[in-house]
Length: 328
Image 1 (cartoon, rainbow, N blue to C red):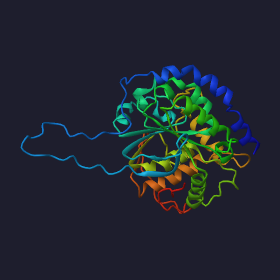
Image 2: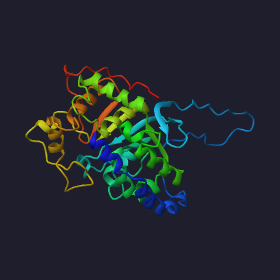
Image 3: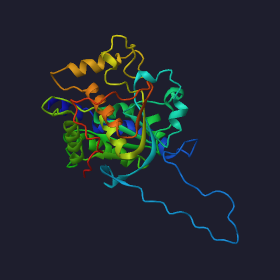
Image 4: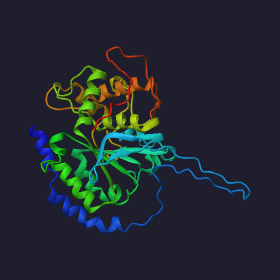
């Protein structure tokens, strides 16, 4: 509880005002530029015969994703993608030269404050959806020129505990997101509802048999991002995610946890220490990856960089391979 309060209160409205007002003018005056759209457009090009009237095919309405609500208008998120590139923050992507391949997807999904500038050759330049943890808000603001000023076509989904996201004036993160969206009205900012957050907990327990709260487990941003992608995308290409048993091999290479922090902690050391930890709050990165591997056996999910396919079914996981239940 103390950690939750400390994290939430660390994002104060005063800091946000001073940071955001300094780049309002840049954002609101930004031109169309050379930006790629986050969603594909379908046009009927070519000459129309003068002797015959043609009709444009009617588009199906964009599906509503329940449980993701706009900060300002409280409307649900409407979004759908045929192909998605889910780009992790892993050091596995360094030197991969997958950028052009990633950008060819209809939607590109990134996490937290992972940058693309200076890394386009490996991770691409487009961002359609960015999933952000409540604890990463300040880091996103520090990278405001890239992540906010140039993100008019990007959807942001913020997740966090209800103590941070409550709408009664006591949710510190929600209050600051509302202020941010008021100052930058072009930003598409959504939060995950409390009911939906409980659904994510329920999904984790159903898939692993582990009660998140009783085991002091914090679901990672990767968990939320993958589950959202399952709802959003017809096909998911995941870049930079290692298989569940990768770090347990003595021959695994030493790579940074984040591609943009080459001197940061080792990826496998981070995964293993969190998985083995039983005191205090921690992530279960390896457990989550085992669930994702199970999902990939029946869903259209593919792992690239490194390229791998799921092994045989792991009996300990009670995987339903089901999409995340809707929640308001």
